[in-house]
Image 1 (cartoon, helix red, strand yellow):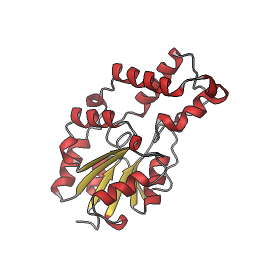
Image 2 (cartoon, one colour):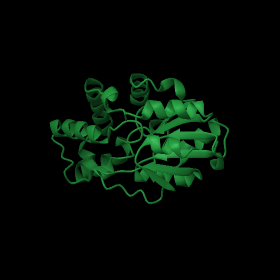
Image 3 (cartoon, helix red, strand yellow):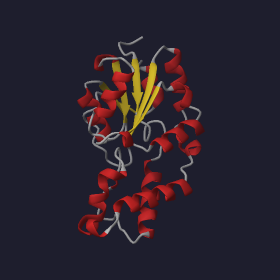
Length: 213
């Protein structure tokens, strides 16, 4: 076994191929509210959460909106338009997770996604039992690229950064992992033009990551 004792996964873009679905759902909701996001690159949203970007979305109209009410409406919209995680899970995700557990690695998950979405995704994909800890960015004052979510994950798992491997895909997530002091490996992006240069290694699939451990 490698020097790593713990592997902490991001969720979106790593275990489930959801980024395009998130973007389209968000755009549809905002269009219904008369709000355009055509002035923003999809990269703005990847690896973060909505509370980070309302100022950029609303721009000069920010003060005209009741943002907490808008957030509540968006949550209701998401609950009415749930993501089909069972269709979007990467085909090798479960086999990889099972293999890593069998090899003796302890697993955690740290995602910027809302906790209710994370838990549903893991339940639907049958991955929930394999993660010792599950952290959501909504529990922290600042989301990624702030490293706090990963620092807290390592603390709760009682491991050092040197004993920790983080699996990410987004620029924000990779930056958060690197800032935490852990080693970061990335799943290659071929769709959005993500800057993944700070990852120590890049892989096409989870299967490839498993093979290197």
